[in-house]
Length: 187
Image 1 (cartoon, rainbow, N blue to C red):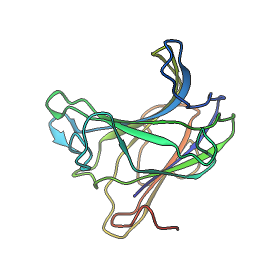
Image 2: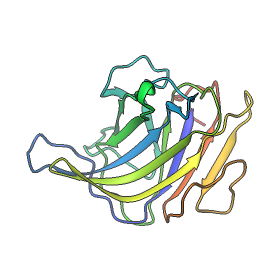
Image 3: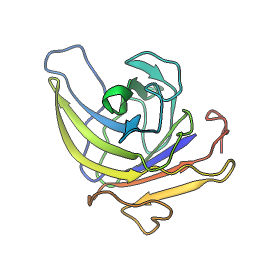
């Protein structure tokens, strides 16, 4: 289970997608390495056995709510391409507008990485008629914890152990990895 906590630094419009040619919505994007410099981190589908663009399980734990009443957020996986060292991308949509300083927590479930050192990037994005504009972006180095040992990554805050920050930004991200836990069970 991967926990992602993001402090929103700039208002993000609703993630509600439409079929309109003038569609305007917010997105949260996670770029996850498959292969970098010949080192494998994840399979193209993050070990989920899904196809390109398929919806994957994600849980809105706090600070983010489905765009429709009683609705859920939507997470889609766009497959990586390990032969060309292209990362896999998780795109989160179908959420209500987010306001600056909102703390958002989303849980994901996918395979544990094969190696440490891959750079994960999380971005808040506005999609305007299919054109993307990045509002904020933050990268961190992925680590692999020992089985059953949670690892907390807090970027832009106080706690950086055991990872390193790749670039300076105002977006605050934290991620906890707890291998083998059921993502659907309450904490």
